Image (cartoon, rainbow, N blue to C red; front, side):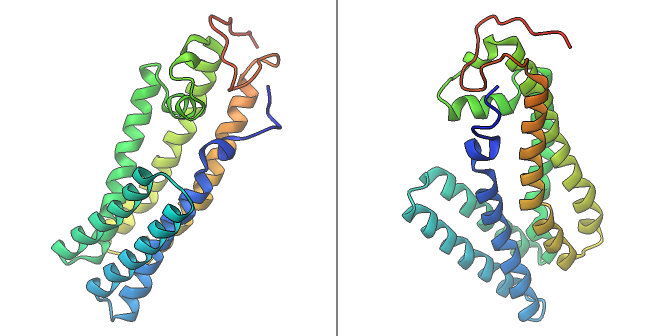
Length: 216
């Protein structure tokens, strides 16, 4: 397998997106504290930072849809917090997103449409060719469990902090469990694929129709 040529991080650009995702929550916490625990100041700071990120990414040529999704996520979080008057609710959409993602990824594995394969296949322009390679399908399924675990870890940390109303701790957890956890998830899921694909497999870019899975 072409394990030394590229990694999932290279293909998906996960670290860059994760770094961008940490900046608005940091801005919210800074604004919230600087404004005397003012939700208005906090969400204003978060939206300003998110807009700056969006402009920067668009100028670099990133896809408009991906940039808009990131911006809308911050706007929705801001609206929820403003509506409830609870600073912890700025993190509620992210908490729900992680719960939903864990369920969807698990279902995709059970249905033999592991989302890691769907995403990488789309990035590589393969559509569904990877599903006709039993070895690749198996490895995508095993590696996708690492992504499920990523979301479960976040929920295990976020839920107690959310119900305790720990706004500052939620902000710290958001940062700690975004870029570092995404980087670890990318690295470990790539390692799983490298270890579970047959040694003679040509790699992600070259799915083999009807290939027989090698026995350990």
